[in-house]
Image (tube, rainbow, N blue to C red; front, side):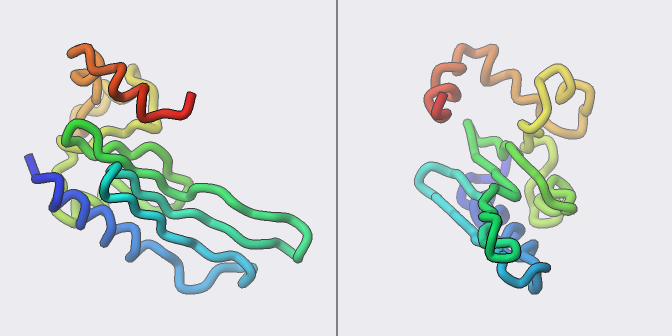
Length: 131
């Protein structure tokens, strides 16, 4: 298993490399938000469209939970799992958290993330949410 420090750096490098140089409209920007202490990493899109509509949403959200890299959200064209793999994180250490557990188990290339739940660690995962 790749150490957390290596995963953190790989995630940051992957996300920074994926920020587009130019957005249309040019009133939008992609902002990296990295919290190494909580192991949460996001790219946010923010700005205005035609100075009338506010835009603010996560493009990509990744967390490290129990030593595994959880891809929680991906609204980009980037194959984030492949990109992280190219930065040295094995897919077997990644969880496609944006899919339900029943779907994740169908892809043997990635970790299913169910071991954390089976070991009674659900409370620690739930405590990381706002719900």
